[in-house]
Image (cartoon, rainbow over all chains, first blue to last red; front, top):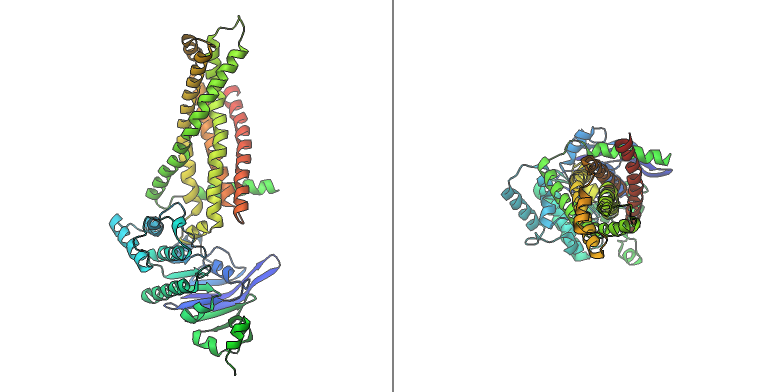
Length: 250
Length: 247
């Protein structure tokens, strides 16, 4: 479980996040949605410690993250897996080296144990047999899946996904979404997905937060998305003229 | 003020670079890879430049020593001194500042803008130490060997050109390179090389590590790294020479 308490962040005179509080539940796919510039990525960066909030606290299973020392932060970070928007795979390493990287750094597994784990993770994301490929040789969807394999290699308790579907076709997006959901449920991970993809919202949204102009504006699940009368949420879902025609009449 | 900010930030980065490595076996492997990439990968360029420069220095020496009062073995002596004291440690380091320095800053800069450094940090890895420490250690270790090879090839290039152009005989050249040899000069030269290697890798890594923006900024960081490295190498050259040869 990850708790946000009154997170605020300002860049210069721009207030990006304003007293955001929320609880991300374990074993569920938690979604942070909102239009571009609403503060989603900043919130994610605060949660993983790449930005420091002006005020507020992030708790990982009741352990304070923002107020902890560098050593304590490093300890918590070892429990985190992250899927970056662009994959952030290490260019100079093959797929198997990328996936094995957290195992090399933080475990004392034997070579065989590492190979088995790498193969298992690659198989989990349907990339078996691609061990020796370099990131430059992969398609966008394969990169995301490889990054997901690396993120889960060291048995994370928390999984963060920054716009996992950006740049992917709807079919590949669904594959990625499905993988995230299955992995979350199978390993009881606390997963946080930053997205503005409505397919993802309806597919995997167990616990959803809408960020609007830096504020926590709406929360619910994928069923409640369809019945809400929150104006900003409706504007987000039914953004295009075509979608507006599909809006249920009340 | 901006200069002071960068100097302070540079030393703060070095503090992170030289903090305790997270896993020695991984660092050891990285150092070997960097020795191959930064050192062995530069060997061809250094060999070509050294042979040709040695030849040119010999021809220029012969041209300038064209006097009945100067013995012909002075050509070998002059070539050796030029190569050992200045060409191999300083000019080769300036060339490496261009080749290796720009390579380091663009590699780390690209890792920064593609979030690979963020990925390391989120995994709980000291990215500065993991990325920069092996490069510094590798360059400080391998560059003296490169410079020794450069000295040998430079003197050899001079020998070939001396004979080929008829500037001096084989005996005169070999006698010249053995005459008035001061072993301390090699020590001085290698000391400079080690300092230059540290400057090249750390300054280039600093430029890359704090890159912000996109591909354009990576290019700018790479250019900055070559410019600052060149200036710092020349300043360090002056200071070390003053301390070791005069002071």
